[in-house]
Amino acid sequence: MSNFDYFKPQSLGEAWGLYKKFPGSRYIAGGTDLLVKIKNRELKPPALISLRSIRELSGIEIGEKTRIGAMTTITDLINHPELGRIFPVLTQAAKRIGSPQVRNVGTVGGNLCNCSPCADMALALLVLDARAVLTSPEGSREIPLTEFFMGPGESCLVSGELLTKLLLDKPAPNVRAIFMKKGRVKMDLAIASVGVLLEMDGVTCKKARVAAGSVAPVPLRLEKVEELFQDAVISKELILKAQKIAMESVSPITDIRSTADYRRHIVGIYVKRALQKLLGNEKLLRGVQGGGFLEKSPPGRRRQK
Ligand SMILES: Cc1cc2nc3c(=O)[nH]c(=O)nc-3n(C[C@H](O)[C@H](O)[C@H](O)COP(=O)(O)OP(=O)(O)OC[C@H]3O[C@@H](n4cnc5c(N)ncnc54)[C@H](O)[C@@H]3O)c2cc1C
Image (cartoon, rainbow, N blue to C red):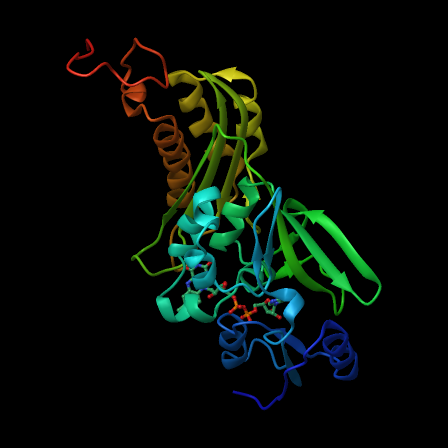
């Protein structure tokens, strides 16, 4: 591992000052992505600027707009007393990240700023329509998270700018979301992953958000699938069409984890399964008719095949 200076500023101003003073330096949050790259000699920064003591970057505030500080660790996010109740998809994704050791130091901001196509938190935040607040000495700007990822390892942050927080609107009461991930083993980066959110009004879908990971240069929203569900009455045919469109919407690669074909297949299957799970009627896809789509069968009455 190469040598570098290490600084622990107490304020944003101090961090920006150090960033300017040491050209090529890097911000470090938990270091679980960055230190691996330094160890593998992919990066050789002259200085690391720790974000750990900067108060503005930490903490979770629940409200009409929920605020998640960029330095919130994955463990703190999971253990928050209210967050998981309001946004269960966030804790579902967080629990699938690495090991307890990784989750104890790895942060939400680091997961996003690393800009890996397989970043688990990105999918959950994308389906929740999260907004990212980016701050530099010139001021702050708020952008939809969809605009944050530019390519593998590349974000829209300009030199020295920091991701300071994420903002989430309070979800409507009839919103449900799910995160699904396929890895080679339980603790692994995703071969492919999917996040799906539905807002339902009876059998009609008012809003759908679908995101996929590890199947394109960035974590991405599958807008063509979302459009399919907008104000649509959900049927078996529609779900199968969503599966097909999801597979057509991605551009995976073959690497040590998987082939491109398998990734594409998994995305289609997971979109279908996620929809089934959210809608709570898994029989629909097996062609069983009758009853309200979201209604459970009356107890003791078997549906006809
Ligand atoms: C064994 C292991 C298993 C893992 N498993 C998973 C997994 O299952 N799923 C998954 O998604 N990830 C996984 N990861 C990757 C990693 O742990 C996560 O992405 C983690 O959330 C990164 O956060 P961090 O705080 O450690 O980021 P760091 O490594 O500190 O930073 C990552 C990058 O973001 C930049 N950065 C960090 N914070 C900010 C900020 N606020 N503003 C601007 N730039 C910033 C840094 O400069 C750096 O370039 C794993 C890593 C390891 C080592």
